[in-house]
Length: 477
Image (cartoon, rainbow, N blue to C red; front, side, top):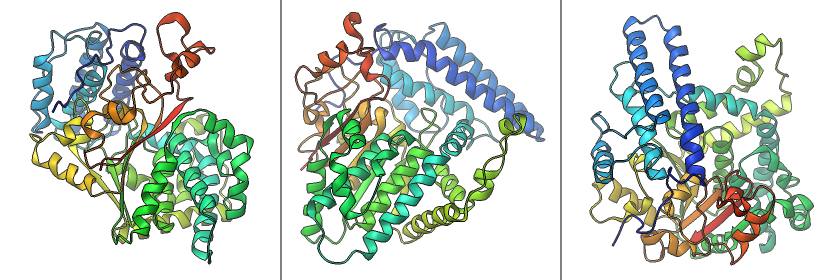
């Protein structure tokens, strides 16, 4: 059994791809922002040793930025005491003289963030520092209107689910499940129109709503009906423990909607436990670390200082944040209480695992020669009714970032993670990279022909901006 795709994978050397665009333009900006963050924190500390270490980290990051911008060779990662260093360096050694603009996109981007984390891991005072924490918090705070809107809707939903007695329409239940998953899929304020109403009667009316149809038209593959059937059948079978795992993507508002989905699944009885899987090091700027979970709950527990205290930028602009109403404070408090209780009862858990920040595809999850920690993770996932992989990077790792024909079935594209793996895989992904599978014949060509879609350039530009999405399911049994 092979644990990496044998066909060509996305490369930073392909000038028609988003990989090239990312390596040339985005990575230097990301490293610059990281340097600015460390510089700012270094200037705020009175600890002389921490200041000196901060200066060294800034120098390391500046060197990394130079290497990226000048297409230098990728060098071995220094040993920082973590076992995955050997894995990264073994892959690096197997490559043919890789440079930043001539290498596997998936490997090099993972390598970039792993290199960044090493500078901190080798320090004394910065080991657990998250260079992206400021950005994540700022982004969540800027999502205030959407946060408040969803808090109100969620409180209504949970109250209705608990008070509703008697038989409900199976079609309405399925539609509600679909709505919650689609909110989790899009994960941004522009799609709040999907939650116009959450009463059982109004949910059914949503099926023909213009807002819903507009959003659904951009979901190119949608296997949610099959997923719903999977969860309902497990419930009807009377299984006492029914776990749903969610492999997280972004912190902030996206984590917020992930928690909304988790709370809904537990309250609706579609799961008895939900486990959230976070990253163990700062990763791809906005990915969830365990600390982000705590930061979000703290913001909900004390919303007045979080949302009403002016930021430095607001103070400079003479802006004063709007006060929260008593109703808004009550609704945010409701969320905090709900999720805190679920967490305390063991129904809502959070785990971090080094596997998620490893190089290459997720196919290694089922490698019989994997380390014990990975084998334990795989066995846990096999016991799950559903493993939800959120976001673009997780999707790329599921399909190995391979340049498959876009009509390749998802169950085939995910290789050994497909049927027979024992893992029920659901990918909730808004497209932000070239690789995509499971499309009907002719759809890729049709999307390329649209304005901004790429046309005859050879680039699949329609898949770069997050406008389109895929919801793909593979039953592992």
